[in-house]
Length: 390
Image (cartoon, rainbow, N blue to C red; front, side, top):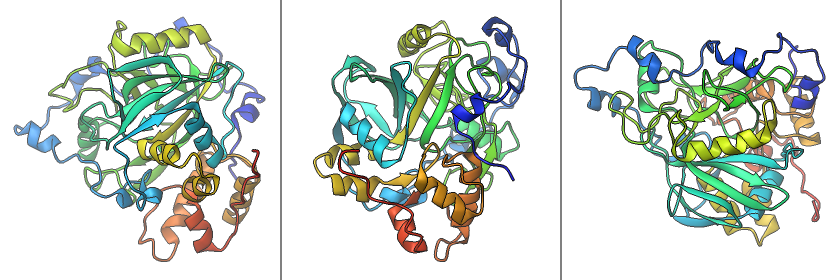
């Protein structure tokens, strides 16, 4: 039976492919990697009414239909909030993450958030953000770095969703597109196609060329990524690269090119915020590991508004999801009948989303999150209260 291994356990195993230099790797093509502008020539244009066709691609109308948002659907929205290291620490704690810290940095990404002023903030003690909803069209996300030792934050305008063309094309038989679910994902400083350095959703530091498994959301029945859609266990190559564009592109129907990758505003030259993002990667060096916590703007806003109330934080934000670790994950794996590794990886996500669809009253819906509400519904009593000083 397949089991989930942590990045440390994977790294202890022999490399699954010959190790390549970064120059050799840049000459190769990523099989299944998201296309960039150079690949557009082989893609057919939308019907004559291109804009109206792409307008069918929409974000879910209700939080209850959006997998990353469903567990907070009853919580109020917060138009603006302040991101601090304490907010990130709270999200790490509530999701049972243990991010890699040896390089002194971790990355974060908020799906559905914008910087209140400008497109970048570097090495700040706090950052003002605005909670929004993604739309597959504009930059409505933020990607940045948490400088752990300095307790400072860097953030850039970005996107964490596929562009409209990607979803439209896949529904009509084109290249695969997907959306990476929230969680703690392990990346390595390596490449995306010929773009280097970029962050690669990789296998290990000794073998960054091999992509990591993930269970990602795909839709073929309509043009909206929802809780009723398919969670696909695959090797999606959802890397972090430049957006290619900074303004609206008519073919893409968006200001960024992504078939599932996370994108930072800028072009391959490099330019704009992508240039500054690459500066951080260059300082880390090739093959360096950096864990990225992908959450929603609503997750962060909810944490920010409840920082003074530990019990409220735990009640509202506790969840097991990709990247979670510990005895609670082991108990969930035991209930699902899979090996108890204590690491929530692609196999656990695959098994758990299938289980969610069978739960009475869920109408075949899944969001991939094991929450306090799920704990109560199953009666499994897996989630425990963290000690006060953890």
